[in-house]
Length: 415
Picture (cartoon, rainbow, N blue to C red):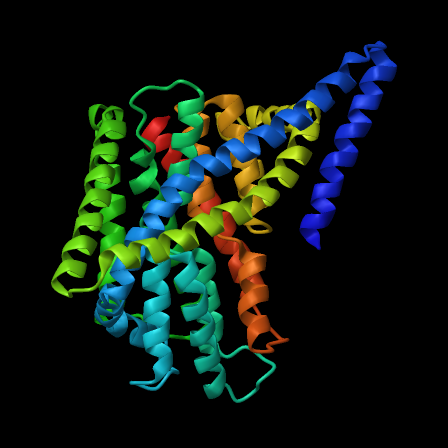
């Protein structure tokens, strides 16, 4: 419902600003600009969707090979000790731990189609242990907090969108994977933030080996970044791109080798997964059209520029670099709607360029935060939870934290 109001306001405000401009200047070309923008946005929406189709179809096919070969289950078993540490209220050996581990693994690998049913299965398992069936348990609250943070290893859809738009902008040898490490860092720090907030509320003992190891990695990451000299930072783009490409290629080959030695029919497995990837992308097209249509009216009327300029004036008064302001709409939209944020990202990449400071930062903002309202509605709704306690507050705090971290990391890598 909130997205409905936001969408309508974008259109209404955009139209009213256009009318005011016409009355003030008498220049009727403003309406031609708005209409042309509407049709251009519809065309752009399908161009992006078609560009996404190839990459997502391929990626979902490869991921399905890993899933059918049992690689997801192996990763889940490795992660089980960590999940037992952060969910102390779930008995050892309970089926929820397995589902939680596999859901996290699927999210980590970008397997959205597998992650959701596994997540619903985990929620149902935790609901069986829940004494008050209408109030979220501690385990469910922790799960929701970590899910809204969501560590992402490879932001597949963002990389695919960047490649598609870069091709349209005539950029040669563009590396869409150069946001791999920055996005991973944003989601990892968001994950830590959500965990520690809920751990504090639930009084969870954090002095356990899996948790200490996770915190050690975070401290090492922060220390390593703080020790970088200007030359290292300047070369970071090519370094990150190389590591990102090597990691993605290595993951693909691991899945292929694993499927080969498990003797599964990789051809059929790939095709089956690819079908799901193509269907997923095609289902996104209407959402891209409807959101880019509203954003186009809002932008071409001058309303978005006015809003951003106003915020920049305030930021300038504080003596802060104002370039990050252009990505704020994406960060504010993401908790409400993933499709809405994708539309804003596509518009930002088109207007400012893919291979720019704003384009790079916008990409990690999109890939580094989650659709909090959607996640809470789907998962809590699936088990009939009515009293979600502090889940929404923690989710939104994590989104704000993730947005701030994404901006800071954007300046570190590309500023």
